[in-house]
Length: 292
Image 1 (tube, rainbow, N blue to C red):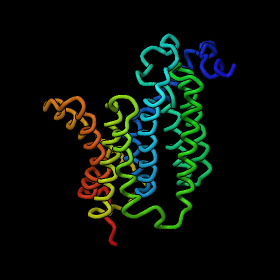
Image 2: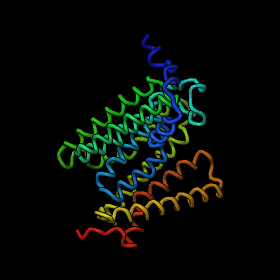
Image 3: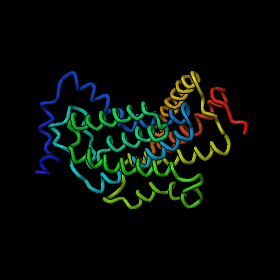
C-alpha cells in the first residue's frame, strides 16, 4: 500500500491541463542549475554580500549532496511515458533535487531576512517547485519527500548556525573542512566515477569560496542600495553571460578532455561570479569600496 502511494504516478495524468503545464514548467525551471548559477551571484552583488554568500554556500552544498545521494541510492525515476515530452532528466530520482534546492535557497532567504513576506514567497516557491516535479512526471512522491527531508535538515542546521556566537565554526579547520567537503565526496563516489555535473558544481563551489576570500582581502565592495541595485544586476549579468560564453568557446576550442571540462567551467564561472565581476563593477564605479 505504502509503496503504491510513493511510486504510482497514474494519479497525475487526470490533473494535467494545457493551461497548467506552462505554469509548472516555469516553476520547474526555477530549480535547475542554470537558475542558481545566475541567482546566487545576483544576491551576492546586489542585495547583501554576506547573506548572499552564506545562501550560496548552503545551496551549493545542497547541490553536491543531491548528486552524491542520487548516485548512492540509484533510484529510478517514474516511467518515461509519464513525463511531459523533453523534460525528463537522465539522472536518478531520489532525492528530488529541485525540492531540496528550493527548500534551502528560498528557505535560506527567509532565514536571512526574517521577513514575513519573504517567508510567504518561500512557501509559494517551495510548494510550486516541488509540485511541478510531480505534475511533469519526472519524480514520484518518494523522490520529493526524500528531497524535502534532506532539505529541511540542512535548512534547520543553517538556521541554528545563524544563532551561534560570532566566530563560531570559524578558523582553519572548519574552513578547510568546508573547502574540501565536495572533493572528498568525489573521492568516495559510491558507484564508478562522479558525474560531469558533480565536477561542474564542485568547481563552482571551490571557486566561489576562493573568490569570496579574495574579495575579503583585496576588494571590500559595499552592497548597493535603491535603484543602484538594478544597474549592478544588469551589468553583472551581462558580464557573467559574456564570460560564460567566452569560457565555453575557449574550453571547446582547446578540446579540454570531457572529464576536465565541467570542472574547469565551474571553476571559471565561480571565480568570475565571486571576484572578477565585482572587481570590474568596482572599477567601473557601479559598486563602491568600503573605506574601512
